[in-house]
Length: 271
Image (tube, rainbow, N blue to C red; front, top):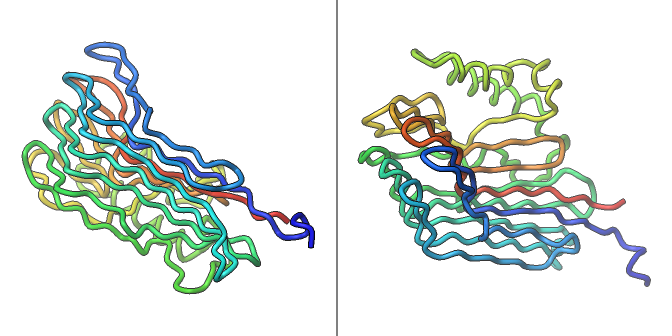
């Protein structure tokens, strides 16, 4: 039988352990040298970067990524596993962690179009903010559907969207929530806002405990004289999934944006 008579899969997955840009106290770009991108035909790709630092803003002892994409011979389904890791992170002596792991497993069915998504392995190891040990409750079952593949895209699933909307409302409606936070995430609570943008933003984080200096609003930590920390942020559209375990918007005295442990995946079965 000719190979082209069989159903094919076009892979698409990226992993970026580290990246960003600094505008103050100097103008610089944070390297993304440890990033990986999977070939359309699948396979395996890895990258690693050791002992990276930009004084005094950020230092890591290691950053690495790994992506694999292949057909599961037992089930006939297509599997894509995307991982991005940073180790011994230090940002301005305020945010530190032993490891931050993003892991995104996407399984597309041999029949049908809607994949199953798993976040098993995602973790913050010994995260500390301003010297305080921070505990992060993660909901790794946010997109879980059991053994079955979903019938519709998550961004069209009423139960999922209700949960996302409620999560956004708890964050933006929290006592003391800043106006910029309400503008940033308030639209998620309305069908019109989601339709206008074509995607949904939420988080794997259910709760954050132990922040001794700063304020917590859902998955966001605001730290005076440092900036804002976004944890476990997940963005979805009709056919793609983007997970960033930590994103930082730095204010005084340093200014810039950093992302740590980012994975994204989708892919297309044809026909």
